[in-house]
Image (cartoon, rainbow, N blue to C red; front, top):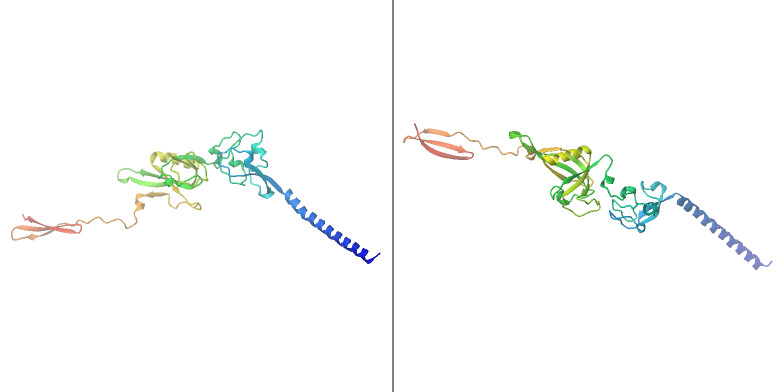
Length: 282
């Protein structure tokens, strides 16, 4: 066998070994990917932003794989569960962003009702407060904000009568403004009613407060969850200690002796002014 033939065989064997190694590398890299795919779960998400009150359509939804340990609670595995042939129409009760998972809590029930009751936390109640530009903080209290609810009323009778402001509820969630409950709203709106989420006891106090005084809202910072330090403020709390002016002192009239003409000089001091008067002595 010639040297040239041996060299050809050696090159062929070398190339064959390289090909085997490359195939083994490809197969090894595909195994983790297959294992990773097996650990994924399909989740239905929104293709484009979906506004509140919009009925779901097939073109609005798609399925994306989520890791098994990151699947959101209340999500759906298939779009057919939401827009299938025999599935009742579903409507968004909360706005959805693009690629956001579609959750049961953000959709109407099987009867296609967009009830506010679906959004209330367990054990809480919704109560509406007649609103104006003053009550609703100039229209800046919007759905999703948190407010403190205050009552200003008159207490006592006669000389003990005074005006007080007390806290009826703290850090209450604003559910809606008039008939709007879109938490994506970002423009001030002067409304006729503000609906807030409170406890049953707070709802009773607010209802009673509206009949005995003026109820108003105090807008909170989005990061403020601290309790208020003062629950009741009276008129006396508006004046700082020592700020009250002392009443002018009325000094008694100064009487001098009778003059040779039988007249007496009398001096009267009112506040800081002193006046002199001549009167006939008896």
